[in-house]
Length: 405
Image (tube, rainbow, N blue to C red; front, side, top):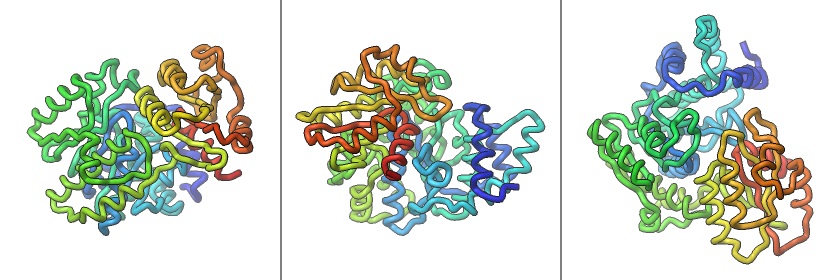
């Protein structure tokens, strides 16, 4: 039995070597031992390449503003396991997390003995579902990767959302937009309407075919939906208008399902939402901005947002990424806004090391990220904006360091 959070976290971290394990049989076995909390939950299931966390947060805030207890499960988050499970913006407590972890220990040991080792993420999902089933009216559940074989895909949601489709996690999801769209479309369930912001023809065709096959209504959402609703956003970028549009449209669908929501409260809540690490101004003088552009699509959105808001500034960028991401392409994209790119690595088993990154861009500076951040924080250059971008895990490490110091 775990006596405290540190022990529970160490136990979960110790299972990371098991890697990513698509498929639902292990998570179903864990949930069954917990009394199937997923069957007692009202949920909105969100899959997609980018924008899941922002869309979920916009929606959670809108529900809370309308007096619904809004649960959420998103990852990664700056606050780790505790921040990833929330009700009305309040993290799960250490005591509750340890309690949920302890209640799964017997079945985990039994499954380990059967050589059916549940992964860290599968256990994390079960902890979240068990807690949210008891404490939330409606929960926003973000798929970890893909959709069809993702551990969260045991739900029967009120509504499914597919934010967008891009080339990411090809090792697990397939090498084409159509393949990846088919995996994401795996969250579509009979009886639950679908919203999507996907734009590529091959993705649209696949998602439409899935929705048609099980006869569920499908709505395509574009950024204009948010403009029509007149929502002013704190979070910058055209991509955030699209995420907000998905949230606005979702609120309208929920109204039709008997979830009462006041339009003005929805508008207020969405307009005030800010998420850490999403084009976040973490320091004003000098300006330091953090953005978790963790794949090529995210990087394209980041580059566009920088060009729109800082056309006349000098740009300096610190970049760190996972080794399984298209970092060569991402570094090329960064060169559209600056030549002053510094490459770094960070603490994570999937982080790309410096020599690998330097092969992609031999002319770049290379430093320990703490040195770059220290210099940026003390710089006296008002014509320069400092950006830290790449993996969300990296962004959160940098964020914690800046906040602490």
